[in-house]
Amino acid sequence: METESEPYVRLATLRQLHRVVADLNTARSLADTLQTVVDGIVVGLGYELACVNLVRPDGDLVVAAFAGDPAAEALITGRVGSRASWERRLTMGECWGGLRFIPHTEGWVLLEDDVPQWHTDGPDPRFEDEWHPEDRLYAPMYASGGELLGVISVDRPRNGRRPGAWGREALQMYAFQAAIAISNARLRANMQRALVRLEREQQALRASEESFRQAFEYAPSGMAIAEMGGDQHGRLLRTNDALCRLLGRPASVLRRYSFSDLVHPEDIGTLLRTSAEGGRAELRLGRRDGTYVWVSLRNSVVADAADGPRFLLTHVEDIEERKRHELQLAHRASHDSLTGLPNSAELRARLGARLCRRPQSARASAIEALDAAYEGREVHGGHDGHEVRVEAGGAGEHGFQPDGPDRYTASDPFDFPGAPTAPTDGPYDHHVHTVAPAADVDDGTKGLAVLFCDLDGFKSINDRFGHHTGDAVLIEVARRLTTGVRDGDTVARLGGDEFVVLADGLGAADAADLAVRLRNAIIPPIRVDGRAVRVGASFGIGWASCGMSADEVLRSADQRMYIEKRSRSKAHRRAG
Image 1: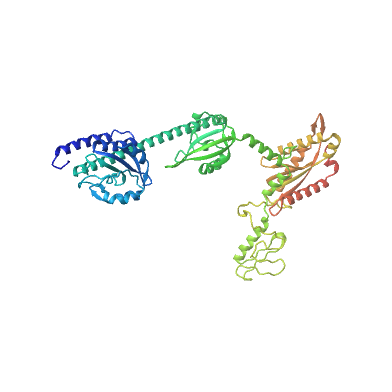
Image 2: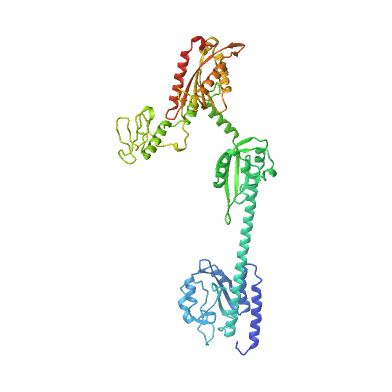
């Protein structure tokens, strides 16, 4: 019998406890550790049966290891007991320090709960500390933070008696060491799983990086990685072979540049907007030979979860051929197919861009009228000969007093007879109004001259020699007209044998001189297929002015051309 007066029993128990605790630290896995815990109880602490009930993530306890009886092990291993049933057991019976003992006299109420059990019937104890088969002894195991890890359950002491004080202390100490071993095993298992997961992620990352590298390097179109943010924003960090070939520069040279160094000056704004926001843009990049190539840029921001946006991944597609095709289509839509000059639609568009619906003369008169109203004086001379009279002390402090059909109020500066409706839209504050020089005297005013040209004698050439010769004459006339004007002027073919010249910044005398020079340039013989033919030209000079439409301006020039044509004899008109 174990008593406190038998030191050798304590020493033997300590030796056994030391040996089985040492075995706890040799297990390599959590399952091995749990089995070592129950084996140590059976081998070293003197119990025939032992099991470990381990807390699962959901809080319930599962029989994770069993030792002492193969039949009982096969029956209850893996079975689960609810957390509520276990908490009930750990609050019943007698508290032996850190242990919980439930005698058979109280444990009968637990026979029907869901905790896995293994017991046999037996006779009532013959003496006070004799062990009964339905007695229950539990050793809870807690983590360092006080969290329940599991419960050790023991049964059938080999001496047939309930453990004494020293036996209880040994079981409690063993449970404490088992909790440490189980926590360490779990930690090792978690670390091993984390290492395996990390290795798999690294393998996946390496595979992804290799896939990206191959896709980047061997992409048929240009690819680049550029720095984002900081002083080096936009600097090229990496380029593929396709981009190097497109721009005619090696990768080592391109790393010295950013896209802003390579882009066409007219496209820098488009590039900056695209770089800041990501997205797509079409612009021109410079080649090594000094030429520019049209490309489509598609930017993707490569973000870092910790530091935010880090890089720009840019896809560069060569769209030179498509742009050339688009420009050709646009040129065909706006230019004459025979002569290459702007056609009628393009002429009207260019002319309309210089005109607005508000006459400059009316606008100036209205402003003068308003200024005069504030000053309390009279202003005479309005639009289209209407009298504008402002008198102090009229209808109000800043108003006009109507006194006849040609009088108007200042509430609307365009509300006078014959004035066009004041527009309610358009950027008139920034529009430079086009004005026409005076018709009767050259007062030095410069304007947009519209020279309407009609060829004389062209129909007879077309009828006598055919359309081939007529087309050759039109092409040569177009060339001579283009040669005879300034770089900023427009020469357009209106249709048939009619041409129009737009020349800005000319006075009346300048326009007349230009018409004479162009007529003289057209008159010399034109050789077609070894034959010399001649045509003449009649010019009418009109002037563009705000308040007129493009058709009105052209009609005015056309009328003046016919006046000029009729003023000359047929012999003078026909030069070939």
